[in-house]
Image 1: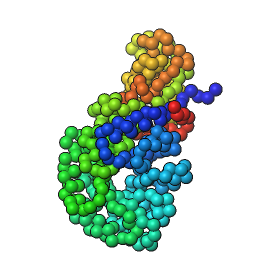
Image 2 (image 1 turned 135 degrees about the horizontal axis):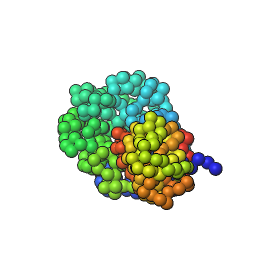
Image 3 (image 1 turned 180 degrees about the horizontal axis):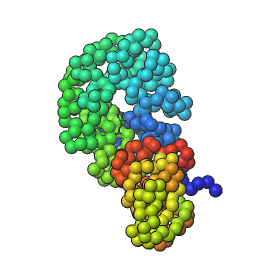
Image 4 (image 1 turned 135 degrees about the vertical axis):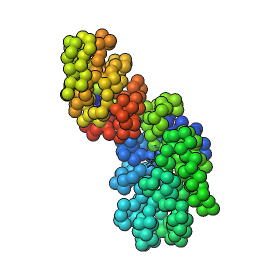
Amino acid sequence: MPRPIRATVSRAALAHNLAVVRRHAPGARVWAVVKADAYGHGLVRALPGLAAADGLALLDFDAAVRLREAGYGGPVLLLEGCFGPADFALARAYDLAVVIHSAAQLATLEREPSGAPLSVYLKFNSGMNRLGFDAPSLRAAYQRLERLPQVAGITLMTHFAQADRDGGIADPLARFDAACAGLPGPRSLSNSAAIMGHGALGGEWVRPGIILYGATPVAERPAASYGVRPVMRLESELISVQEIAVGAAVGYGGRFVAQRPTRLGVVACGYADGYPRSAADGTPVAVAGQIVPLVGRVSMDMITVDVTDLPEARVGSPVELWGDIVPVDDVARAAGTVGYELLCALAPRVPVVTD
Ligand SMILES: *Cc1c(COP(=O)(O)O)cnc(C)c1O
């Protein structure tokens, strides 16, 4: 019998969440962001649920080529653009739109022989200070791109650093509008937090990621409050149940010490499956549909939970680590991180099924 852990990816939930995004950005076209193997859900596996998206955005050329080979014929956008000169030929061969975020990328593109023209996303640095042109150099870059026969069209884009904060987009939006004033072409601004808080912000294209997968882009706000549904369910079973006495310590380092006679359940899921080792005592875990607290340190292959108040818990009881009962964001909070990280970190050893 296989180890009982498995993840389930719901294509219906993906399609539902995409429809929710559209309602928040009426009229805008949607780049479904599928970087990091569709946020850990599996790129090719996620495709049917995202069939209604207008295009797919990601980072790896390999993954983009895989999309084409899997028969995807829609627009594909490479969010970090080309990593070297050879990538421009690949982009052209596979009809991939590319971000241009730096002077070096622009210079490389200028040296490319002209051929089938590329669609280009020119990135403005609105305050993240990672990638993108600043205001003075954006205009010059735009004009150089405009002159290139190897460029088919220019979309102006930016990525917000603090769209999850109240008032976090006002200044960057003003900087973007000022920098791009008078430059023709479509715009693309909003990630999940911006879409759910402000819509498309006048952009022709939006770029939702996390919200499509049913986790929250805003730590203080539960995903369910946006009307989205979790796409990934991570489940396992109790593989042992035992009674421990007052004063008994549990797991590596003895982090948890029983304060009462305790029934302890052992779940076949650990950090080598992608469950965060930093999860604190009290992290919610659903056993037979009821939430019980994690107790003791997460180990490589197991966690331990206190099932004293759940007399029906026994070996074989179903466990949900995250999904419909336990939002992945609640586990993330208890581990000092965000749902994004947990979803992306689902380990390759966990079998994944779709429903
Ligand atoms: C990852 C990413 C997104 C999606 O962000 P979410 O917060 O997951 O919605 C959008 N745009 C760019 C440039 C990104 O890198």
